[in-house]
Image (tube, rainbow, N blue to C red):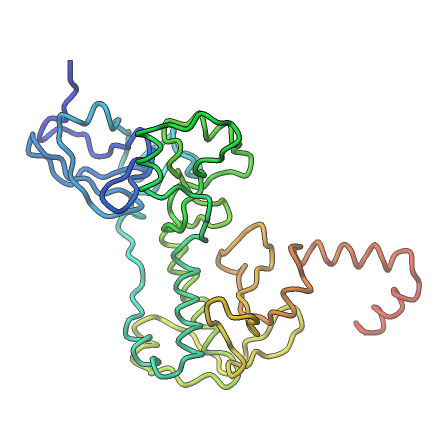
Length: 319
């Protein structure tokens, strides 16, 4: 018997069984969707990581399943969200609008580029060229590939909101190919994941850094107040070399050969999180490589431990 969602029932959250195309965007597998309305024929759903859409009630049982919730959390045990649950309050947190800020600095390209880069890093995951497009997905479903030598799709989205399900580094190609969503994407990289509340904190932190650099233009008081910024002019430093950052050397042109300034990570594996990302020099970021600050310190300690000359130099510099 078809399991319809009856109008007026207590079913508040559901989730799709697999990732499928919905228009020009993806409906992501196992992401909680809030039931916005239900007239017995159509159900309007608001997915945690996307825009509202409508399904036919009669299609519910083949495409969705019910989720439990209480006053604080919606529980999504089939998802890869931390602890298999999402705070319901996170559904109502909106991205901070910085349209007024970008409009004010539209004639200052280096600052505008930095602002837009901060916004992108705060709210969107990195790209992935291996992710199947909706067109390729539809062609595959119409004529599935059988060759094991041909790679089809990838579990990671080619850019998505950062509160899409995080995919563990231990998730294998075999796991993906056995997924009901295959070859559609199902989430974002672990280091790209952040709750909506965290994303807003990251954006504000990066904007504070931009306008706290040397030679940064004055941000209007009205915008400072609206966004809740805490700007300390001329104070922001590259944490690798300790020098104050100068916005006049910023170059964030897409695909430019050399970026003088980078958005650096103190612990690269942790990704873009509050307190872990800062505006620093590209040259310093290359020196750090893919290692965390703590790992680099451990390397220095090993060198100094067995080389008296290095040890004496370090002690002298720290004195």
